[in-house]
Length: 253
Image (cartoon, rainbow, N blue to C red; front, side, top):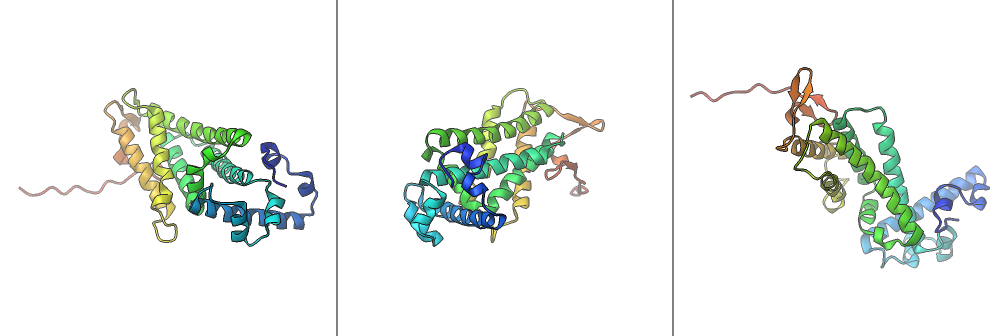
């Protein structure tokens, strides 16, 4: 049973659950995931305060007693929604940037991974953006700590990027990091995964705009690449490779 206890929820499954057969465990996990998906959509739509356990049970088409078989409170449900999301984001980011040294490529990876995850979980993005303060006590502290680790990993990427381009002043690195998160986390307000451009395309544009703003800062230097300075216009923002420049046609006088 999922309890309002971070270690029990994320590190060591409950004894009763762990002792189940693989088939029973699969069924248990499938039902848990179904309830969480429905709860996430409901909270995103009506807000945490208005999403009662009874309403979740009705939307998930399970009994109220069945809900309490998996969660001992509504807060434990919210806790698991947020912790799952940020644990996934954090683990995915660390895995994908491992062995990547170019901070531009690291930034592109971070933006693309963030957008692709939340494009597939758009309701979770809204819940994670609005409902952290609905948690209390250990649940809040644990979730806040995971979010902080994700911020720190992203901040390190931005620090490396600014250092590479010798941006020495005129820019607050915390503000730059929060600016990026602001652009990424506003996705749920305007993006429709079913009808909009693919997440990879949006990620490419956001990365390019962010890079262009950083590199063209008045205090930015130029990073030597193959004997010459590389500017934002030389980069394909999706992977940091040089772009081929189109021929310039001058108007005849």
